Image 1: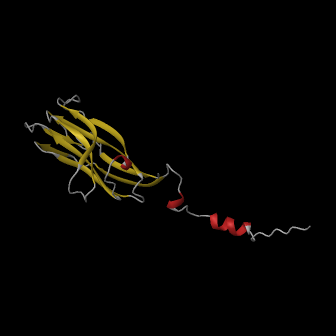
Image 2 (image 1 turned 180 degrees about the vertical axis):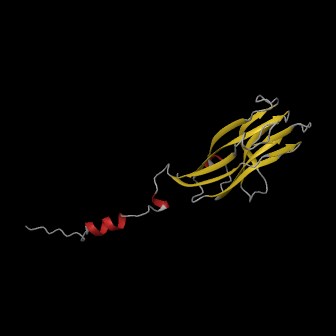
Image 3 (image 1 turned 90 degrees about the vertical axis):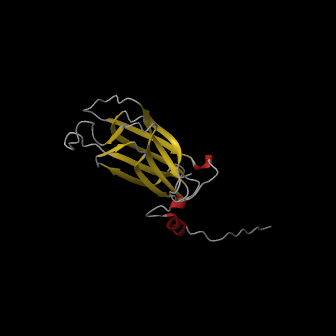
Amino acid sequence: MTVRITKPAFNLREKLTELDYIKLPKNKMPVGTVLQTKYVSTSDQNTYTNQHVEILSLKVDKNKMANAVFVGGNIEYAHSNANGRFELQVSVDDASSYSKIHAITGEDDNPAGNFATNNKPFFFLHDPLAVDDNPATLYYRILFYHHTQNGGTLYVNRSISNSNADFFPGSCSLWAMEIER
């Protein structure tokens, strides 16, 4: 008895051509891949007294709502009894309201003195799966929250006694990386 087996034609070259990407599409990226990076910085020297201040802000349009966002940056500052804290905040409603997601640093007395600055780097993995509201567009900002507003002053990208940019060429930055899930 003879048994005949037939199978559909398989063209190896054609299959390899289908898989040959010059640029891998976003839907084919492995988990953990950085899909995009956003960055903003300022070296402007500013002084704020008795104010809550937005230092920097950044908008991220995610490729997939479930993706995580790795956020980081640094703050260059000094203060004279500004009694406050820096926070990383996120908005899910077109930047009309923000919520704190990470406490960066808080101080009462300035440890740097009058002729120096503080530089605080920070990193935070924002996991949208941990919250109920998970929009495709997120807005991040660094906010200085002035607790008591008692006359204390915040100096951004400068020292208390010297605003010479040659001596203090620092800057504040905020960046975000979308991570594939």
